[in-house]
Amino acid sequence: MTEVVIVDNPDAAGALVAAHILDLIRAKPATTLGLATGSTPLALYRSLAAQLPSGGVDVSLVRGFALDEYVGLLPGHPESYSSVIGREVVGPLGLTPELISVPDGSLAGIRTAGDHYENAIIAAGGIDLQILGIGSDGHIGFNEPGSSLASLTRVKTLTQQTRRDNARFFASEADVPLHCITQGLGTILRARHLVLLAFGNGKAEALAGAVEGPVSSSNPGSAIQLHPHVTVLADEAAASHL
Ligand code: GLP
Image (cartoon, rainbow, N blue to C red; front, top):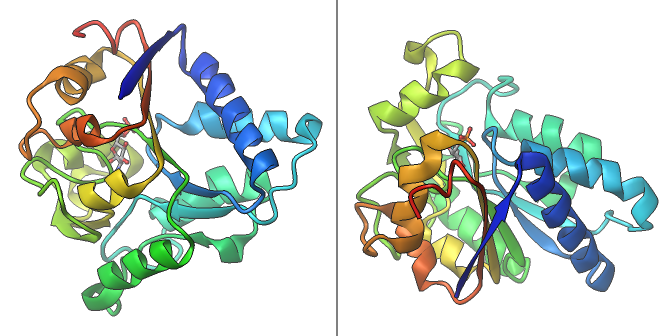
């Protein structure tokens, strides 16, 4: 079932989801979170960091699995999702770095990285809460249109639209990697609870497709309709096509 909550702005969504995540961790200290990157979840991560000191919650056992990673960036590249997760999530929240995983986007590891990641998620007992954003072309994680609804973690080619959208994080569009490694739609659907965040006009069409459109691999976000427990938090602009 999909519940849609309309919020005033990203900060309001962040505060709501952060409070829920802290409750989850209080009840289950070894909670496993699915971590999204991109600009959308930043307010949530900021809110978690702000609520933590007063929340009396020990996060040292929290596990995290990033959704995706670029392929072929040099280790430590500031825009690799490994760096972003470290900077925006692990550091500010004081999570235990050894318990946080990002798919291996190095050229050396790429052949086995998908299977390795799937096995690591299973060994951790699965993901309790998966945070998701949505791309303007409807992708979740980096599952671009055409992704199988049953897909698992694998290498994908980024669409031109996604590379254009993400060029703002790099010196130029040409510097955006051509490939990525992403949890599949099937991987995402195994998480126990999906929390999809969408803000701004630019997401309105993609969000309507995900929530109400036909379920189709050409519209990857629509995979959420196959999940029994989905919460969508959107501002009025992103929800305007619903
Ligand atoms: C990125 C990420 C996705 C993210 C989406 C939206 O490329 N791979 O996980 O949800 O595209 O990005 P943003 O939140 O910056 O709009």
